[in-house]
Length: 280
Image 1 (cartoon, rainbow, N blue to C red):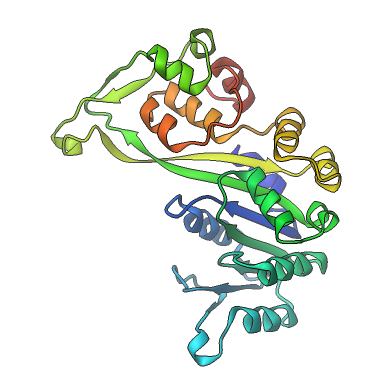
Image 2 (tube, rainbow, N blue to C red):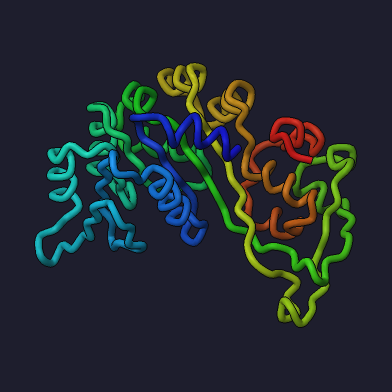
């Protein structure tokens, strides 16, 4: 998934790249990681953030301060005129910032930004609800990444966990779908302060736009149809499915997966997901 993200999204010279998720899901960290990857002496990068959270050498970072007239609208208007290669918007928060991101991408810029939606398809639907034309979304958005940070099972006190019938029904899977999975749960020890968890694990959903997904957006299909087309044609693995794969390796508990990840439709079997993601 990481290779796909770098080659099909981060290294693409223009277009809008959206990182989405709720507060505390690690969006800013992913955004700055992309900036660090793209930052070199030949690339001009300008940011508009509220506020600047991490200072990076070699790029121009602007902190929004409406008290002195440095508003989001004014900053974006000047950024576009300075001929940057990459524009970073801290967050799409209204119709104006969404339109600016789209217009900047139309003129050949690469735009990186974050969004507050539940999953990747939700990001596209929300753009439509902001009255951005469907043909503009389909022609400029390169990819949408949805992510969460779940608690990692403490490796020092982890013990095997067998899913209960209630777990299976809440996940909408059968026991056969989880064949080969080795779920674990933390018992609690001094190393994890008796919580059973230590550290965090990133769970991701990567939607790279292809012609079929773009066509579905142009035809203003429902989120269900766009999600189905994305899974079938672009190789998208949903947040729940990526969580199941990492849970099957014993990294995160089933309780975390059930309580923190959106359950939209029936996930595929663990064996099939491992084949798609190329993991053991």
